[in-house]
Every structure is written in C-alpha cells, then in structure tokens.
Length: 286
Image (cartoon, rainbow, N blue to C red):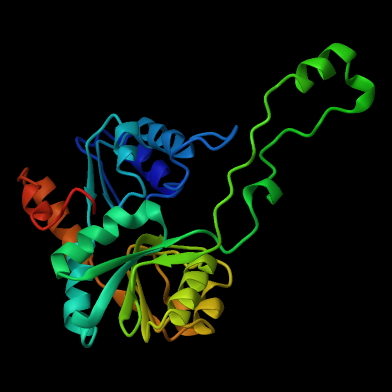
C-alpha cells in the first residue's frame, strides 16, 4: 500500500515516468482461481496500474502469465544465473548431484537447471498430508439450514453428479538419488512443510546431502525452526525478501545477492537501453 501511495503522489505531482521495483510481487501464488476464490494477482495488478506506475521490475513471478494482468510493461527478471553460479562455486562435488523437482509442477524448472549443469533429475510425486476430500479450507459456503431447504432444491441437489475428490498417492521419488547430493529448486519457499517432507524421503532414499535453492525466501511462521530440525543441510535464497531475522534463527539459511541485477535493470530503463542483455542466460522454463 505504501508503494501505491507513493506512486499516486508522484503521478499527481506530474512525474513523467514512475518505475516500480518490486523484487517479490505479493500474492503471486493467487494467480488462478481455486474453487470459488478470486484471482488476487489480477486485482493487485489493476491497483498498481491505477496508482500511476508506468513500468514494473520484478523477479521470478510464480506464474509468468501474471505479466498479462498488467497494462504496462513488466520486466520479469530471473535469478537462475546467480543460483547456478552458487551451485558450481559453493557446493563441493556438485558433479555428483541430482536436481530434484519438489513436485511435477516444478519439473520444467528442475530440467532447465539439470540440462545447464549436465546433471540428472529426479521428481517427487505425491503428498505427505491428508487428501483433498478431508481438507476444510473455508472456501465453500455453509450448507443451508434444513428449515430453509425446500423439497425441490433437495431433489435438484440429489441429481447433481458426484465425482470423487482428487487424491494424490503417498509421497515418492521418481529417479535415483542414492549416494548423491540432492538439490531441490523452486521459485519460492514459504511454508516449508512440503520441503521438509521431501527432504526426509530423499534422506531415506540415500541422498547424503540435501540443498534447497529458491529465489524468494519468505520463510513465514515457524519455518526457521522446522528447517533447523530437518535433514536439509542448506537453504539458499536471494535477497528479494528481507530475512535477517530468519537467518538468526536458522544457521542453514544462506543469501545470494541479486542487487546488481536490479540496479542494472534500473540503469537500462533510465537510459532507454535494451533489456535483452539481462535475459541472455535465461531459458523459457526459468
């Protein structure tokens, strides 16, 4: 909200261009409709445009399609070159590693990393939690009271087709990680329960070191404590989100500085230079 207020102030003061540098775009995980929910990312994009911003610089959007919610230019920079360099420079014996996709949805990103590092890939499939049919998320309307339900409505409801809820199989690893270093890659790490569950399975399958690499280290709630007690050896994130407090609570968290990328993007926009140079080492799957 502070950003929107400042942008609106600049707009009403006749600023020619207003560029918003938003390394982590909030609510980017809510970019699609789930059940009867709303698309919050689209609402945020409309608010940013309405406030007066003429250009947005961000990093590793959760879904690239979010750029289509804006009516202004959006430069979605990538942190993958910095994370790849960290792997080659700071992980000993990385040639004996395997890139792990935490779920099938992140398989494309993991494949991109694996191909550039000439490493193998593994995919974690399934969930280590209750099925969707047992989840109560508060997104459904409460059932009507019996006194307000007519016989006609009841008959109509009873004729609706019933489809079994989607259930994922127990968590499993597709690929060989025995005697190897496992490197999980993702765009953000917030609720770490799924990462910890995946690490436990990788540890059982013989991985002797486990790393987690992500662009945005949100690490909310009790994430530092869970990571500290988990089999994960190191969590590497960039400084798109402040996490100094979390680092004091968990010594496994390491930071990769990407400020040089943002500063170069600002310089190029200010001097009206091409942004293509910043995407030269980036693939479509990043």
